[in-house]
Image (cartoon, rainbow, N blue to C red):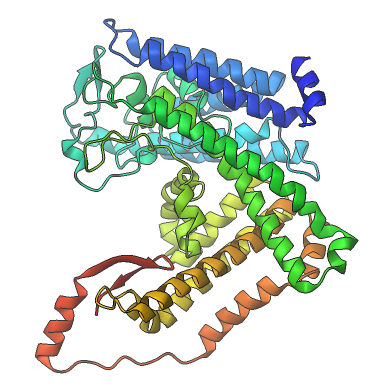
Length: 525
């Protein structure tokens, strides 16, 4: 009743309002967890108590958003656990993993089919798509855990009277960090208790819209093994959480203003088609831009509660300062100023992309071809998003865009890498370098925002008219570049026969310039 009244008063659709309130409710829940449970507890039941709090609060928030539809997430979580249990019982975890994958993915797709409308649906399938990946990853980790039973496990420290993994310390973080959402050793040698699996599925800071992370990380949180000194939790989480809150709210506010001027629906109007081509292209660029802004805002807003809970602790930086960006789902600066689509992959929906790389892309190694593995991963992501044809259109174009970009970068590298030679510090080179970066940024955003149109419009009867209005210019450009790269001959590189020159060239190749052009690391020649 209260939510309905607020919806009527604000004009925000009730499902969207419930989503925002659910994400915001996670903040006080996370704050209480930080105060009451993010400390040592002198009882062997400490991990159970922490997990129980997560279960109760997570289920409560889920019921507020889903109502009686909470049954869908409960069914899939419990059934997945029993699939793994019986798979272990018969000694065939591979079969259990396969059944779990089919069950979870099929359940989600049937849910899409039953609930789908012509618009982007904010209903129980939204958090369920997050749960789908979480349960598939859980069963795969359990399958991989069988390998550890055949070898001796490393020694583990005990906190709260329970064996846990070695903590993160300043000393062991001098090496390059692994993403904490899916570290190297996330396998599950033994099946976790059902109650812990439910806590993992309904973790209050992430079950609605992400971020994705492994059960291994969740267990490190409830056992306090995430910290080197449990009596001295690193400072800064409150400040970082508040920062995430305000940046997320700012982005959502900008998005609301932006879509008022450049709504995606405007691309389907007669007024839009009556505009000059240049104006239509500009309007499409901004419509795509503000469509992305929505995701940047909501993910950053959700990140704040993860930071407050303590699960986002990412060790220390080079100066010994604690970092709380371990589960950041978007790198704002990198996303906004990326000069390539390849960089965007690492800056947008980071943890889902990492999940796809680990659990789908790498598992398709049997195909023997990276392009086939990429197509398989993108097809999986398109299906995971829903049944609307716009998703498949978008992901197919994404694959072609990235492949074309990769080819163009390689072909133009002999001409562009001298711009990034640190020895070249002349004003003309600096100006050309900046112009090149601006050109790359503009090309990347044009391709990205253009593809986003089909992702947002969803249906063929809307996608096709929108692209017709700009004469499919984005498709023509990218396929023309791809075809040109295939047809045009490549410049031959002369072999250096002189031994001294060869040795010198090899030595110089080891010097890596720490600048990136179009996502490609440039080496000094």
